Amino acid sequence: MKRTYQPNTRKRKKKHGFFARKLTNILKNRRKKGRKILSR
Image 1: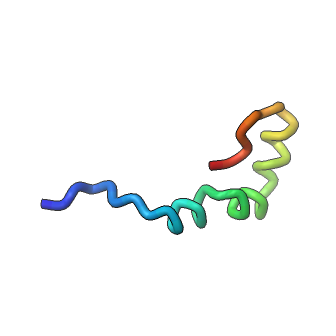
Image 2: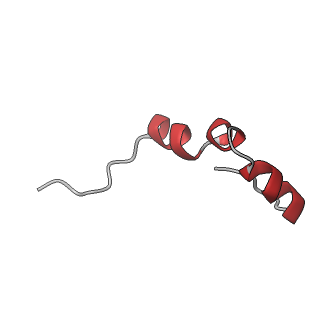
């Protein structure tokens, strides 16, 4: 039986990367809060 987590960097970037967050105002909120890391 295969393990459930099969990491895929491209999929991860598409879902949680910088450009995915740029589309909404998540980055702006996180900048306002003073985060060191804005996205993964």
